[in-house]
Length: 279
Image (tube, rainbow, N blue to C red; front, side, top):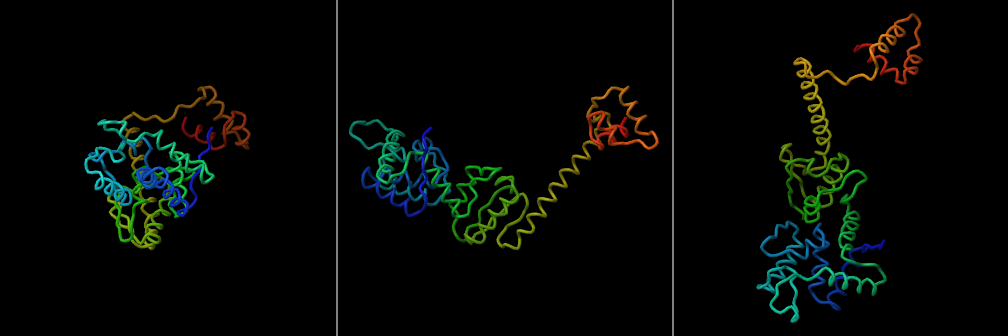
């Protein structure tokens, strides 16, 4: 399996861009820069046309607008410019981009290909404090794109805080990074709150706790309603009626050892109490 390197810092990123422009042309340098700012696959990037652009990242849009200004007649953002293609309109190929990246990687002594842009982007975002990856969650592509393009003074909006991620500590870290490092704010429409100060982070825990308690409360109401209608009878026991009767007789004996009884049936002491109380 081929190992692909990430470029470790902004200075090296600029070196790669400069060498791509010098040895392979501006289009390859633009692909490199755009790929660093957009959380999409190389095939999606290269097939991007001017009539289907929906991008919030300012840096990526600057690249796209610059190319549109220079080549107003193009259909694709990264369109092939070669006499061999004649009048055929097509985007630059992934093979061509891979070849250019590999060449620059060999010049710098690192292993580069088209996936290096995504690896580099994630690596630098982590250095900058954005938790692109977590041991339990992965940010959705549109969330990562929005975070990467945030500027000072911006107020980014999401419908629900759980649209960002499912991990409360990661969410807290993201909000704190937006407020303190980017001097921006974040709004959650469903919760009707805008986080623009660090002090408001304490509200985050209260909101999550409230929603968890509300969900459990509604669940209990549903179970009780189902029980009243005879639709909910709980989980069936694996014990036969004879075994349950024996269990109860032993349980109610004077000086009965509840732990020993439970162990003899291969269950816990708590399970034993539930069986005796339910049946």
